[in-house]
Image (cartoon, rainbow, N blue to C red):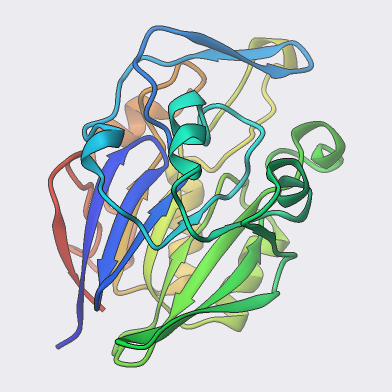
Length: 260
């Protein structure tokens, strides 16, 4: 049986440990209470701090950064942590802004992480759209990440990234065999843009899982910020996976062993 250890730090931030690899996603470690501007009249207040301090994360082999330009996915403390990461995978414009060692990936581009004593990790970037049709020039580029390695039994490990449910995300179900889906939810809305959504709701996640048919679903990024309109629905801990018992709402800070 192949397993990984998954720790939900808070928000979109997770630590994945598998076969000697330590992978961090979307580092956010600032204290709560601050309001961050996201541009075009939008902003959000951070209401919950990380369950694991940045100093306690330890060394990581790589950071998977879905996007660098929103503080709920990369804040000031997270940027400091990037300075010690040997590998950063992110969007193409994000890599330009961050500089080396950040590497930009376009949707469906693939790269590998290698180490002489560990299995090779293949990382495939997957499409995201962080808002309604036409919002990309405003909301910016975002990507998800699909990870595969030798020894997986049930399929890949997929991080959806901040995205609405649209055709590009549905392609993941068509092109990948996802075993573990880490879904960014929250149903983000802002007063200035009315009913428009900028990330998936619980209902969207459930619909997507009907197409993905994952063995395990791990929801993240649904609480801790004032712009998560769908947060109360997520806090009821509903099932998202088609099969009962396959959805785990991981307790922040507590490592979870997942069969992969």
